[in-house]
Length: 440
Image 1: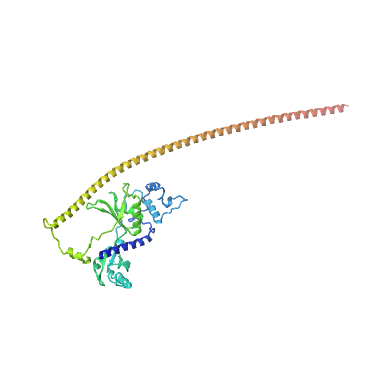
Image 2: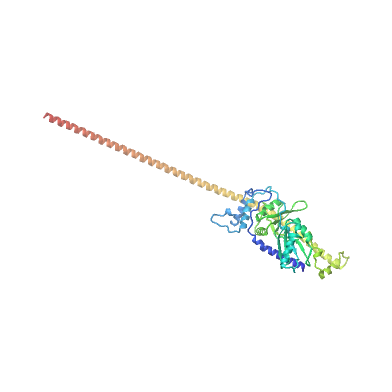
C-alpha cells in the first residue's frame, strides 16, 4: 500500500510539474557558451539553409523571412533556429565546459513523503519553515522552493548544493515525526534526457553546444566505458522542464545531427534510479506475504529437489533471454553495418549527382552568358550601324546646306553684279543726257 501511495504521489508531482512547466514555455533566452567563445565564430550556415529549403522554408529564421511574410512560429522555436544558425558551421577545438556546480540546481531537490495526515495546514507550513529556516535543513545550507501537497501528504524542498542535499537525505530519511516515518529521497527529475546513437567524435563539449539551442543546460556528459571510449550515449540535464520538452519534441519530429555523420541523435526521457540507498528494511510493508517469504532464509537448493527443478527452469528461461538478446544485438550490428555501407554509397551518389547538377548549372550559365554576349554584340553592331547612318545623314545634310548656301551666295553675287551694272548704265545715261543739254 505504501509503495502504491508513493507511486501515486510521484505521478501527481509529475503532473503538477507538467502544468507548471508549460508556463515557462517560450521564455528561453540566449545562453552564452560556457568557457568563452563568441556566437558568430561558426560562420557557415549552408547546411541549415539546405535544410530550410528542403522543408519549404518552414524553418527559416527571422532575418531570412521575406519582407512581406510573417513568421507565425512560437518565440522559443524562432530563438532555437537562430541559435542553430550560429553553430551549424565547423566545430573544431571547442572550449572546455565549466564544471562548477550551480547553486539550487535540479539535482539538489528533495522529495519528502509520508507527512502525517493529521497535521493542520498551518502546522505543516510551520514544520517546513522549521526545516528550512531554524532546525533541520539550516545546517545543510540554504533552502528554497518549499512546496507541500496537503491532500497527498508530501512535499519538496531545494537545497543550495548537492553535497548538502545528500547529507540532509542521509540524516533525515527515516526520522519519526508525529507517528510517521519521513521518507526523503532525491526528487524525480523531468529535465534530464538520455541521448543515444552518438558517434565516436561527439564529446561533452559538442553535445553541450548542440543541445544548448534548446535552453540552459546544468550538466552535459557523454558516457564513457572503462577504457575512456564513448559508449554512444549521453545525458543532458536542462535547467527548465520546458527546454527538455522542446528538445525531446524537436529531436523526435526531425532528424537532428551533431556531425557530418548521418546518424541522427535519438532522444528519450531519463529517470535516475536510486542506486545509493536502495530499498531499506525500515520502509518495507510487514504484510502476510512478507512473513511468508521471509520465513525461509538464504540457502542452496538440494540436489534433485523440487526447488532445484523450478530454479533450473528460471535459469534456463534467463539463459534463453540472454541468447535472444545477444542474437538481437548481433543482428542489429549487422544491420547497422549495412546501413553505414548504404549511407556511404548513397552519399557518394548524392555528391556525384550534386556535382553533375553543378556542372549542368555552369553549362547553362555559360550558355546564358554566351547568349547575352551575342545579344550585346548584335546590339553593339546595330548601334554602330545606326551611328554611322546618322553620321552619313548629318554629312549629307551638311553638304546640301553648304551647296545651298553657295548657290544662294552666287545668286546674290549675280544680282549684285546686275544691280551694279544697271547703276553704271543709269549713270552713263544721265551723264550723256547732261552733255546733250549743255551742248544745246
